[in-house]
Image 1 (cartoon, rainbow, N blue to C red):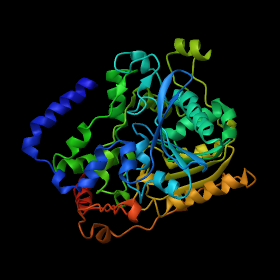
Image 2 (image 1 turned 90 degrees about the horizontal axis):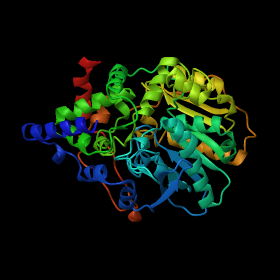
Image 3 (image 1 turned 90 degrees about the vertical axis):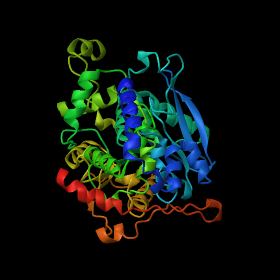
Image 4 (image 1 turned 180 degrees about the vertical axis):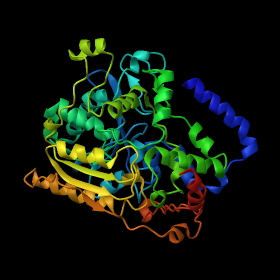
Length: 450
């Protein structure tokens, strides 16, 4: 895989003089955000920032980023596949969920799971030379990473419970932990699941065939797409290539043009991919094929050795007693509505079941209107359960459906804003994040491919 990345890098160098870059058309602040680390982003926008090291039971060394508010209630935010702690703040102080929770009085902890750019370490193994390092799936993240991080946060803050936010893989790994190590349910006020993933039979991404083919060629247990500026640099070679990158992005997460912030999209590209082990997407593909939520499927002989049976066991969802709030979109290619609703029927303590029409896999925390629509509801439900300690009714019936009022196409394209205005937070900071007129161009040129 590293060889493939170097080949692309060489091609980028060859094509650059021909295509010409478009960096001069992108706000300088956005380009800077694309290249800053999580801690540097927090410092840039005048928020406090800390980094904490945590060692798991199986000796992986993880980094937790913190927006500290000592004495306040702790919240733990866990990213999805190929993502990092930056996902919760990359859209800026007036959009990011991490900032929103801090501004509402919380002590915010941002996880980095094993194998990503910030948690690529081990007590004994070298990820660059030891293949044994890359022997995990999201199963190990749920079994070891989450318990280690939860315990570390509670020990540091002195609280007995925290509130948990997971996106995508961050929900999968929680379901692993809470079903396999059920004692951790007692440490959770509420688990807020954004684009939750457990069952995957109805996954709609058209790229699944390519994913299976690529994994079949490269095999298991190696680093998949380590963090690199290559993808950002490639996408900024020309306006046409940037549009291609947007279309590719939509092919993975689902298309929702109205919620895509084209001004800030290059900033997000700078933090992707975050790095992971190929065994993680392999495990997801197994779920899609088997129509089960179960442990990793080796061959029958290895399954017998590990599990004492020819097939892997299912995760016992009925053991998840922590309150769970589900937030998902109808246009999510990875977390289909049918699969989330199946999950909702099996979880014993679903307290919120909220479907957003048209939204895709990333819109819950990257969408243009997520700050004004989803986040206030998320905060309200979390505070309700922090104070109620489970004495309210459980809601596992049909989901609440909501269609967020969108800007018209003309209004959302109006102005062709070219600047993300940044002022110092200490002087009433404001970050204006806009959609650009080329968003409309992406839509127009994209029609023929959809």
